[in-house]
Image: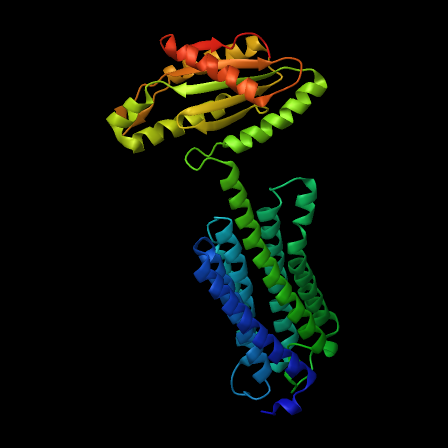
Length: 398
């Protein structure tokens, strides 16, 4: 084996690729230790980098191990690395891994290496591996699109397509390589050379693409973490409903729209009656179950334009855009009856609950969120002081 000073261009490229993949693998393993929620995906992507490095190592040594099927082993390592990439994305998306498909693809690739192991059949081996690699790269790209595009506004969704670009480019490069192997094999295959399987242009392209893929995958982890942090900042952990902060933001937006259109905005303040007794009789786990069940019921009854939020403790807030006082009272009565008739059970025990509801409606003039909430809250206390399990309407319009 030559010294570093005597390395050819392709040998130097392969050596740099090996070192880079080792560094990327260590980075993924460090991330796996640092962030337990991303551990499974990070370990898969560390395996992706290590298999890539192993494939590049075999390509580098291919001219010196004539008795060993170097190219066949390297090709299988390359395909395995791409499959680990997809499997890691499936872990992030909480999807069941397509292990049967992966095994079938590896079996096809292994059969191609055995059937076309002879040098004169190199074109078919390259074509088969390139087509499989092209398909797996495309699979990764579409998996990324599904992971990122559902979140955010239109501009954010368009921006989220950028991380999938290296995978689409990789798919195109492998596809072109398969086509070149079929139509012009003499330009791709040169016997007794280290670049029999990988050329300088392909090596450089894959070096940059592999690094781009690693950056894209790191971006996926950071993006998903940002989504979770945003979710935690604006949603209640127990019920999954928007919290007080999110309700304030929603109310501010809807108030501007209501003032611009001259439409009413109503609020319902909902409180569980005698909730302390539920905790005393069924424990805090039973109380949490009641809160979760009530949250689901309120969400099911709400319109698409409404917001249901956990205001605090056993209190919930429902904001009803474009809803006059009469409509708010009717909605509140429907909710009260639905809760009263809801079959809530916990550990094979029935937990009958009722709610008291106070309503308030803004109709004209300057909007003050505190005034709307205070009016609904006052109506709620009136309902509780009047015997509970009833609806009271805030005095006058705001």
